[in-house]
Amino acid sequence: MLDITDAPSPSFDARRALPDMLVLHYTGMQTAEAAVARLRDPSAEVSAHYVVDEDGRILRLVPEERRAWHAGKGAWQGETDCNAASIGIEIVNPGHEFGYRAFPDVQIEAVIALVADVRSRWTIPDARIIAHSDLAPGRKQDPGELFPWKTLAAAGHGLWFEPAPERIAALGPALTIGDEGLGVIVLRAGLHRLGYGLPPGGNYDDDTRLAVEAFQRHWRQDRVDGIADGETRATLMGVLQLAATESPTGVLS
Image (cartoon, rainbow, N blue to C red; front, side, top):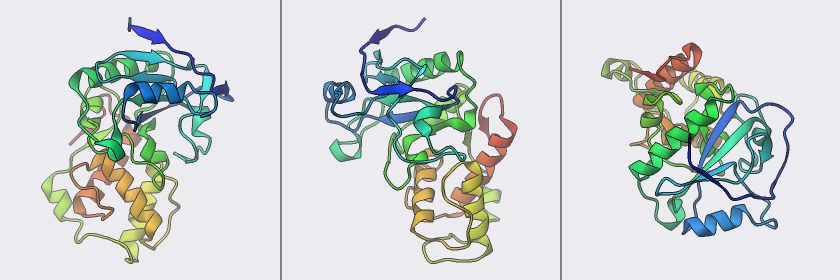
Protein backbone atom coordinates (compact mmCIF):
# COMPACT_ATOMS: atom_id res chain seq x y z
CA MET A 1 0.00 0.00 0.00
CA LEU A 2 1.50 3.30 -1.08
CA ASP A 3 1.73 6.16 1.41
CA ILE A 4 -0.08 8.95 -0.41
CA THR A 5 -1.07 12.31 1.06
CA ASP A 6 -4.13 14.11 -0.28
CA ALA A 7 -3.65 17.74 -1.30
CA PRO A 8 -6.79 18.49 -3.33
CA SER A 9 -6.75 20.74 -6.37
CA PRO A 10 -9.94 22.34 -7.70
CA SER A 11 -8.76 22.17 -11.30
CA PHE A 12 -10.53 19.15 -12.76
CA ASP A 13 -13.74 18.14 -14.47
CA ALA A 14 -15.57 14.98 -15.56
CA ARG A 15 -13.98 12.30 -17.73
CA ARG A 16 -15.67 11.16 -20.92
CA ALA A 17 -14.00 7.75 -20.90
CA LEU A 18 -11.85 5.48 -18.74
CA PRO A 19 -8.15 6.47 -18.64
CA ASP A 20 -5.85 4.35 -20.79
CA MET A 21 -2.75 6.57 -20.86
CA LEU A 22 -0.12 7.76 -18.39
CA VAL A 23 1.65 11.08 -18.96
CA LEU A 24 4.82 11.85 -17.01
CA HIS A 25 5.90 15.47 -16.44
CA TYR A 26 8.48 17.39 -14.50
CA THR A 27 7.24 20.34 -12.46
CA GLY A 28 9.71 22.79 -14.05
CA MET A 29 9.63 25.21 -11.13
CA GLN A 30 12.30 26.27 -8.65
CA THR A 31 10.82 24.44 -5.67
CA ALA A 32 8.36 21.65 -4.97
CA GLU A 33 6.34 24.01 -2.80
CA ALA A 34 5.92 26.51 -5.63
CA ALA A 35 4.88 23.76 -8.02
CA VAL A 36 2.28 22.29 -5.67
CA ALA A 37 0.92 25.76 -4.89
CA ARG A 38 0.42 26.44 -8.59
CA LEU A 39 -1.20 23.06 -9.20
CA ARG A 40 -3.68 23.85 -6.39
CA ASP A 41 -4.31 27.49 -7.36
CA PRO A 42 -7.82 27.89 -8.85
CA SER A 43 -6.71 30.84 -10.98
CA ALA A 44 -3.91 28.82 -12.62
CA GLU A 45 -6.39 26.26 -14.01
CA VAL A 46 -3.74 23.54 -14.10
CA SER A 47 -3.40 20.34 -12.11
CA ALA A 48 -2.27 16.72 -12.16
CA HIS A 49 -3.41 13.57 -10.45
CA TYR A 50 -0.16 13.09 -8.53
CA VAL A 51 3.06 14.88 -7.57
CA VAL A 52 6.16 12.88 -6.64
CA ASP A 53 8.70 14.85 -4.61
CA GLU A 54 12.46 14.33 -4.78
CA ASP A 55 12.40 12.52 -1.43
CA GLY A 56 9.80 10.05 -2.72
CA ARG A 57 6.74 11.56 -1.03
CA ILE A 58 3.58 11.33 -3.12
CA LEU A 59 0.71 13.82 -3.16
CA ARG A 60 -2.68 13.12 -4.73
CA LEU A 61 -4.24 16.29 -6.12
CA VAL A 62 -7.06 14.93 -8.28
CA PRO A 63 -8.91 11.59 -8.06
CA GLU A 64 -8.04 9.26 -10.93
CA GLU A 65 -11.72 9.11 -11.90
CA ARG A 66 -11.65 12.81 -12.74
CA ARG A 67 -10.06 14.66 -15.67
CA ALA A 68 -7.07 16.65 -14.38
CA TRP A 69 -5.74 19.57 -16.45
CA HIS A 70 -2.13 18.60 -17.03
CA ALA A 71 -1.50 17.75 -20.68
CA GLY A 72 -2.76 20.76 -22.60
CA LYS A 73 -2.93 20.82 -26.37
CA GLY A 74 -1.36 17.80 -28.06
CA ALA A 75 -1.98 14.33 -29.43
CA TRP A 76 -0.91 10.72 -29.02
CA GLN A 77 -2.04 7.77 -31.13
CA GLY A 78 -4.86 9.85 -32.54
CA GLU A 79 -6.15 11.05 -29.16
CA THR A 80 -6.37 14.84 -29.10
CA ASP A 81 -8.00 15.23 -25.67
CA CYS A 82 -5.12 13.70 -23.75
CA ASN A 83 -6.43 15.04 -20.44
CA ALA A 84 -9.58 12.98 -20.86
CA ALA A 85 -7.65 9.81 -21.68
CA SER A 86 -4.80 10.03 -19.20
CA ILE A 87 -3.55 10.11 -15.65
CA GLY A 88 -0.92 12.78 -15.11
CA ILE A 89 2.08 12.42 -12.78
CA GLU A 90 4.18 15.49 -12.00
CA ILE A 91 7.75 14.66 -10.91
CA VAL A 92 9.47 17.40 -8.93
CA ASN A 93 12.48 18.73 -10.86
CA PRO A 94 13.41 22.35 -11.68
CA GLY A 95 13.57 21.46 -15.36
CA HIS A 96 15.60 22.98 -18.17
CA GLU A 97 14.79 26.56 -17.18
CA PHE A 98 15.87 26.41 -13.53
CA GLY A 99 18.73 23.90 -13.39
CA TYR A 100 17.69 20.54 -14.80
CA ARG A 101 19.21 17.71 -12.80
CA ALA A 102 19.15 13.95 -12.40
CA PHE A 103 16.16 12.42 -10.67
CA PRO A 104 17.10 10.89 -7.28
CA ASP A 105 16.83 7.11 -6.98
CA VAL A 106 14.28 7.35 -4.17
CA GLN A 107 12.09 9.54 -6.36
CA ILE A 108 12.26 7.11 -9.29
CA GLU A 109 11.47 4.20 -6.97
CA ALA A 110 8.36 6.09 -5.87
CA VAL A 111 7.40 6.85 -9.48
CA ILE A 112 7.73 3.16 -10.39
CA ALA A 113 5.62 2.12 -7.42
CA LEU A 114 2.99 4.72 -8.27
CA VAL A 115 2.84 3.71 -11.93
CA ALA A 116 2.42 0.08 -10.90
CA ASP A 117 -0.34 1.05 -8.49
CA VAL A 118 -2.18 3.09 -11.13
CA ARG A 119 -1.90 0.27 -13.67
CA SER A 120 -3.40 -2.17 -11.17
CA ARG A 121 -6.67 -0.26 -11.58
CA TRP A 122 -6.67 0.73 -15.26
CA THR A 123 -5.72 -0.93 -18.55
CA ILE A 124 -2.79 1.17 -19.76
CA PRO A 125 -0.62 -0.31 -22.54
CA ASP A 126 3.15 0.21 -22.38
CA ALA A 127 3.00 2.25 -25.60
CA ARG A 128 0.71 4.72 -23.84
CA ILE A 129 3.10 5.49 -20.98
CA ILE A 130 4.60 8.64 -22.40
CA ALA A 131 6.35 11.93 -21.76
CA HIS A 132 4.58 15.27 -21.87
CA SER A 133 7.00 16.11 -24.67
CA ASP A 134 5.77 13.10 -26.68
CA LEU A 135 2.25 14.46 -26.97
CA ALA A 136 3.35 18.10 -27.40
CA PRO A 137 6.78 18.17 -29.11
CA GLY A 138 6.46 21.79 -30.15
CA ARG A 139 5.71 23.03 -26.62
CA LYS A 140 7.22 20.74 -24.04
CA GLN A 141 10.52 19.07 -23.07
CA ASP A 142 9.48 17.26 -19.89
CA PRO A 143 10.32 15.07 -18.12
CA GLY A 144 13.37 15.32 -20.37
CA GLU A 145 16.43 13.35 -21.36
CA LEU A 146 17.56 12.73 -17.77
CA PHE A 147 14.45 10.79 -16.85
CA PRO A 148 15.37 7.07 -16.65
CA TRP A 149 12.85 5.56 -19.05
CA LYS A 150 15.03 2.43 -19.32
CA THR A 151 14.72 1.83 -15.58
CA LEU A 152 10.96 2.30 -15.75
CA ALA A 153 10.68 -0.15 -18.66
CA ALA A 154 12.87 -2.71 -16.90
CA ALA A 155 10.39 -2.55 -14.01
CA GLY A 156 7.64 -3.46 -16.47
CA HIS A 157 6.25 -0.06 -17.41
CA GLY A 158 6.76 1.48 -20.84
CA LEU A 159 9.00 0.57 -23.75
CA TRP A 160 12.76 0.59 -24.26
CA PHE A 161 14.95 -0.65 -27.12
CA GLU A 162 18.69 -0.61 -27.77
CA PRO A 163 19.61 -1.55 -31.35
CA ALA A 164 22.57 -3.72 -32.27
CA PRO A 165 25.44 -1.92 -34.12
CA GLU A 166 24.77 -3.79 -37.37
CA ARG A 167 21.17 -2.53 -37.43
CA ILE A 168 22.41 1.03 -37.00
CA ALA A 169 25.02 0.77 -39.77
CA ALA A 170 22.51 -0.66 -42.22
CA LEU A 171 20.42 2.52 -42.18
CA GLY A 172 22.96 4.78 -43.85
CA PRO A 173 23.50 8.52 -43.38
CA ALA A 174 21.53 10.74 -41.04
CA LEU A 175 18.40 12.57 -42.11
CA THR A 176 17.91 16.22 -41.22
CA ILE A 177 16.11 19.47 -42.07
CA GLY A 178 15.59 19.91 -45.81
CA ASP A 179 15.91 16.23 -46.72
CA GLU A 180 13.23 14.58 -48.83
CA GLY A 181 12.47 11.17 -50.21
CA LEU A 182 11.85 7.59 -49.14
CA GLY A 183 13.93 7.73 -45.96
CA VAL A 184 11.93 10.70 -44.69
CA ILE A 185 8.66 9.04 -45.69
CA VAL A 186 9.58 5.94 -43.67
CA LEU A 187 10.74 8.05 -40.69
CA ARG A 188 7.60 10.17 -40.54
CA ALA A 189 5.36 7.15 -41.02
CA GLY A 190 7.11 5.40 -38.13
CA LEU A 191 6.81 8.37 -35.78
CA HIS A 192 3.14 8.72 -36.71
CA ARG A 193 2.49 5.00 -36.15
CA LEU A 194 4.15 5.12 -32.74
CA GLY A 195 1.84 7.92 -31.68
CA TYR A 196 3.25 11.35 -32.55
CA GLY A 197 0.86 13.88 -34.05
CA LEU A 198 3.23 14.34 -37.01
CA PRO A 199 1.36 13.31 -40.20
CA PRO A 200 3.01 11.09 -42.82
CA GLY A 201 4.92 12.95 -45.51
CA GLY A 202 8.14 13.20 -47.46
CA ASN A 203 9.67 16.45 -46.20
CA TYR A 204 12.00 16.75 -43.21
CA ASP A 205 10.51 20.00 -41.96
CA ASP A 206 10.58 21.71 -38.57
CA ASP A 207 7.68 19.64 -37.27
CA THR A 208 9.66 16.51 -38.15
CA ARG A 209 12.68 17.86 -36.29
CA LEU A 210 10.58 18.54 -33.19
CA ALA A 211 9.08 15.05 -33.26
CA VAL A 212 12.54 13.52 -33.63
CA GLU A 213 13.79 15.60 -30.69
CA ALA A 214 10.88 14.41 -28.55
CA PHE A 215 11.57 10.81 -29.56
CA GLN A 216 15.23 11.24 -28.65
CA ARG A 217 14.41 12.72 -25.23
CA HIS A 218 12.50 9.54 -24.47
CA TRP A 219 14.38 6.79 -26.36
CA ARG A 220 17.77 8.17 -27.57
CA GLN A 221 18.74 10.29 -24.61
CA ASP A 222 22.44 10.87 -25.23
CA ARG A 223 21.70 12.71 -28.49
CA VAL A 224 18.83 15.21 -28.55
CA ASP A 225 19.43 17.26 -31.68
CA GLY A 226 16.48 16.57 -33.99
CA ILE A 227 18.72 14.75 -36.49
CA ALA A 228 17.56 11.25 -37.35
CA ASP A 229 20.85 9.37 -37.39
CA GLY A 230 21.03 5.60 -37.84
CA GLU A 231 20.73 4.88 -34.14
CA THR A 232 17.65 7.06 -33.78
CA ARG A 233 15.94 5.34 -36.71
CA ALA A 234 16.98 1.84 -35.60
CA THR A 235 15.67 2.61 -32.14
CA LEU A 236 12.37 3.81 -33.60
CA MET A 237 12.02 0.56 -35.54
CA GLY A 238 12.63 -1.45 -32.38
CA VAL A 239 10.22 0.57 -30.25
CA LEU A 240 7.56 0.08 -32.93
CA GLN A 241 8.19 -3.66 -32.82
CA LEU A 242 7.81 -3.62 -29.04
CA ALA A 243 4.63 -1.57 -29.26
CA ALA A 244 3.19 -4.12 -31.68
CA THR A 245 4.13 -7.13 -29.55
CA GLU A 246 3.66 -5.59 -26.07
CA SER A 247 6.66 -7.47 -24.65
CA PRO A 248 6.00 -8.54 -21.05
CA THR A 249 9.15 -6.74 -19.86
CA GLY A 250 8.95 -3.75 -22.18
CA VAL A 251 12.65 -4.16 -23.01
CA LEU A 252 14.06 -5.52 -26.26
CA SER A 253 17.54 -5.62 -27.75
